[in-house]
Image 1 (cartoon, helix red, strand yellow):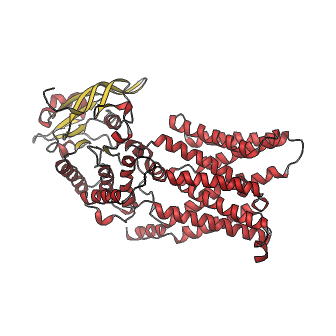
Image 2 (image 1 turned 90 degrees about the vertical axis):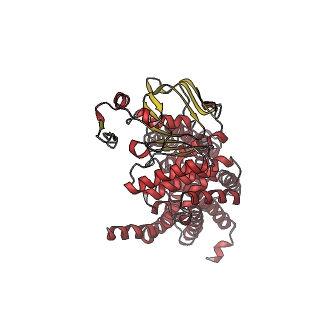
Image 3 (image 1 turned 45 degrees about the horizontal axis):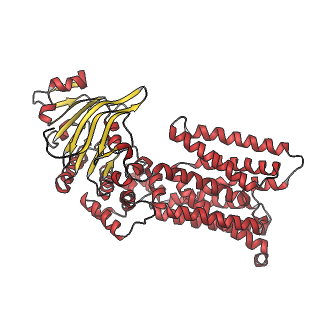
Length: 276
Length: 263
């Protein structure tokens, strides 16, 4: 196993996985707490449609992924704010419509393109040095913004109207969060893929949610779980020659169920039931 | 107005709502610094809209609303931070993973402004606010583990951490047992007296506040009265708003038939 670590590609993929794992799990805290889980799923499929259009037209795929991702989250946020329709309806429509676009674009391609499928299912072991630097730059940008606006983001996740009422520019912070979700999805496309990135956002934060009652601790636990599962997932993937995305996500899912089982919150609920 | 003081909140023929749905119509009302105001009226009478308006979350569709001598739709963040707000129960997810101190610290965020991180001074303010509501010893507890009455105290502490001039409480006693209801109202009275806060308390329970407030504001889309309780709590005035739901017993206790709980 140690021999593997000597390879450049292995070092790159571990670094990429750690960054993506950390990023997804930190933004996941705000996504889970603000109830935007489904938005993450919709965005990843929209971003994938952007990638397919990029390959079809010969344009930079990640750039189009960003455009598609941002368009989806902004439309979703705008619709929610207007109260025109429920969030799950609007994102459900955008989710399937962009997926249909993606399939359409793939259908229009003259040749079979394996790279496109890499974006769907993730292939962290094939991350190039250029992709690694893009991932690195976007990770620093998104984490930096999350840190800079963390107190406002926590507040709107807790209660957006209350935040606005006490002088926080809540609407702008909400759109910032949506934007950062879209960027996170794009960063993660190459490593875990459009289908599984959603799990990377959702699972570490939900696991941490089982284990603590403090916002600060929740974020710390989530990041630790995200980075740990990503690195170990990549090692499992390389060692046993299984796809990296599923290895990471299934490992994270296992930890999630262990956390649910041993959750102090669950114990307390059980006790409450017994005493009443 | 006979009052020589400048009002802290001033509605001038202000209407609120959306086109086709007017929640409050033609409200003219001046609230002065240090007043304890009870806001009463049946469900859907615009009580919460009045709160949201004062919070600057809602601009008037007609007329004007001035808060701290600043038009509501131009209300800046530092003005909003001077209004502490306890939202109606149920608006907030009470199982959110947050500690008591973290909750109260949020009260500092708006006042701090963007880019500034809360420091020791903010933690001191938050702890003092917790002490004022008698919850200092619970600061590291999970919010979700507290009783309803304790949670209300924590949310009041969060409002106090803003170091507000005005405190708005939207039905703070709903869903609490009788003892907790009295404790919360007692606490609000005490904060009003000690911190000289201007208080707007929205409630269904007229009996609980009638002896405490300076004035009662009676709403049902329009403003029906804004006067000391003795002048407002008269059958002929209350009947206009509550109609047949009003029952007055021999002891002159005003009982309003409670159809509000059928949400």
